[in-house]
Each structure stands twice: as structure tokens, then as C-alpha cells.
Amino acid sequence: MIAIIGAMEEEVALLKGQLSNLKETQVAHTRFYHGTLANKEVVLLQSGIGKVNVAISTALLIHMFNPDYVINTGSAGGLQSGLNLGDVVVSTHVSYHDADARAFGYEMGQIPGMPSQYQADETLIQAVHRVLQSLNQNAMDGLIVSGDSFIGTDQQRTAILEYFPHAIAAEMEAAAVAQTCFQFDKPFIVTRAISDLADAQASMTFDEFLKVASKSSSEMVYELVKEL
Image (cartoon, rainbow, N blue to C red; front, side, top):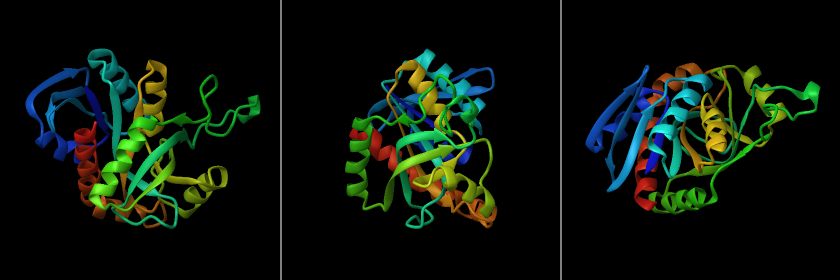
């Protein structure tokens, strides 16, 4: 079984519409959509926005459905100059940009007792590369960073890049998904589409391009599910 996690309705709606044999389960305020996508058994989760929401719902998903793979999808703010709106970013590693326990000898972004970065599954990375070639989709691999803030000012962007100069994108859930998968020994990957450039125009750009980003990321995930 393959688990697909997106935070917002717009980020999961297209995939939900493609599910067959759909069965819906609700636990607390979290809904799980279990069905078939591209002839594969999947469970689709709309987690809600932010690290706590996605950590709770991802843990529930893994406990209830025991998936073989976890895919985190949706939108992200681009941090590198080579990225344009609608491009796809693929995690090699994931970290928090707003965790700071350096006073106790940890690295920036590291939760005490946890890795400084969470490594995406190599099998999934290679599968994504094959899909990207077939789609002729512009994409970038690298570090994706997460925090409980929408990055919508140049100051926020600069602060992230000061500590994570090679980070390719910022968003609000991926590191919590990755940490939960680490705790459960589940392979994961993050593949998102760029909805804004994490700058002073980000909030306006996000509203305008969320549908474009959601379409790009959903197409990517559908083809990835077919590939697995």
C-alpha cells in the first residue's frame, strides 16, 4: 500500500477524484480515503496545515494502514534561483528550519535526540527521476525545509538561507512527515510543486498559483504511484 499525504483540500482533490473503490474513514478530525489509484492500493490523507496536524495524522495513518511507502505532496515556496512557478521539487533530505537547540550542541534544524536531517528513500528518489524524465517536467532535487510559518517576506527567506544555503524549498509539513516516518521505520519522499518564491510577493503568488502547483504535484504523484 502507498500512502499519499497533502495538507490542503486543493492539494489532494485531484487525486481523490481519481480514486476507485473508495472507502472513507474518519478518526477525530482526520479523514482517510482508502482506494485504488493507477491499479495500486493507496490511502490518501488530507492532514491539515502545520507540523502538529500532519504528525498526528501521519502517525494514525501508519498505525491503521501500515503502508509500504509514504509520499508527501502539495505546494512549496522556492528558495533557489533556478526554480520557477509550477516546477517540481524532490527531497533528498528534509529538515526543520525553525528548530534551534544549538545551545545544547545540536545542529540548526535538529530536534534533540533526532537526526539533523531526514533522508528520503533512495528507491523512491530513483522512481521519481524516471517519472520526471517521462513527463519532461522541470525539477530540482535537494534539501526541503519545514516550519510553522508561511515564508512571505524577504527577511524570512534570507534567514532560512543563512543556515540552509542549499535548501531548495520551504513549506509547513514535510519534516514532520519525515520525522514520523523515521520513528516508524517507513520509507518516505517529498515531492511538491512550486506555488511561490518565498519572497515579499509570496502570499499573492500563492493564491494565484496554488491550483497550478496542485495540478503539477498531483500529476507527479499519480505517475509515481504507477511506477511503484
